[in-house]
Length: 313
Image (cartoon, rainbow, N blue to C red):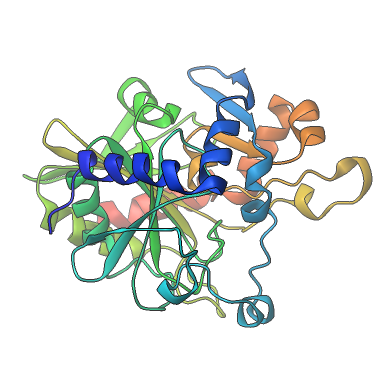
């Protein structure tokens, strides 16, 4: 069975007619508050979204993961939840705790670890088939609330500032071949690589080379990263954010210094999620800068990776 933006929209419509929890959360989403913070050449939106408390505050240590039922395994899904298959390995589900006006989770049927190296091609396929959506991946220690179960997410295009920013902001080309161009983006508060490709296989090969240049910590199964991918005008765009830290210091701070913010792909795409009203009210532009600086790799590390890419051309 093939998949399309139209088919998953039908799934979405049908689920909201039969699934009271999802219907209530999407209805509540229409009333969420947001604030825009303007920086030099771009803006970041902060969204107050109480329904995301489960994801932002999720315990993802090994013990906690082992002690809970996996909420992405087919056997543990709510009986009211239906799906559409994507290929033989994945199913598309309506996300009942949305950030986007239309938001899906796309897990594997099998309970296998959240790892991207051999699945980046699947991500590109999803982006092409669901061309009204941006596909995103959160690494196991980069915002994934189910690090033990492989999955992507999809949110309707036009919601994340990143999509438009990547067209307008200053970029530097660091690698080029017939089927792709790779850019770095400066002055964006978070370092990233942007792969623009017309050739899927070239994009996969470059991604794997890039992946192998990222630092792998001793106890991790993959380098820390978030990825956002979309398909537009017969080409793929993949924004890859190397990470150095899972959660910022403010997440663990006590008293007035505490802010329950656990950045993932959506936050790096330009929409910061605050599940607590106190954090939404007090966060400042300086806080956003500090958080992004803490969790993303610094300019020196970024330059080291760039140099290695240029040396291997």
